[in-house]
Image (cartoon, rainbow, N blue to C red; front, side, top):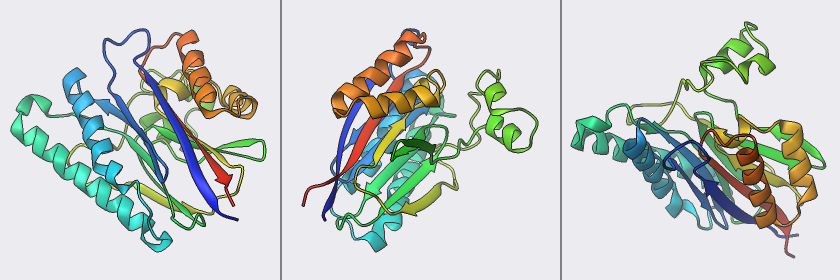
Length: 242
């Protein structure tokens, strides 16, 4: 059995924002989503820098080098964002989330890197699981038992991230997993996860085997829910091409 990754990405500025500060990559070995912050021009630049820094990782990588490769990509993004801020003081405070998944050349392993509140979900055998943990103020309150997960979804400070790529030293989360044939991954910005419930995400992932159609349906659902933010999705399937 030879497992491969097949992916499709889609993005929309939403119905409220004047521009799109999200960026994404949907490749054969790498998928990633970045959600910029810090003002229109700066947020757009930060997310673009992050995706351009990790984009070259979209190639065959040994499984024992996956995490190191993602670390090098994030280090490069950090340096480039710091340089961009140094070049223009108006960019101070700009940053971006980054959630990236890198598939090993053998198909036997994958690695995930995450910082911020974009998310990675795994849909496996009919069950949807959020793999990433939001680096947000409200997630911290949930874990402390101060508020519930439902309350977090409407909390006035739900957009406050506690970590992002901003040119400073950060501590992204890294993890490795064993892929299964039939796995479906969803990477998305909070423009989707903030307005579409997990059970609805699961229904769409289960009901639309065509990746392009699935991604388009998810975007449409976010727009129907008001489209208050930019919305970006990457749908990636683990397939057996033996």
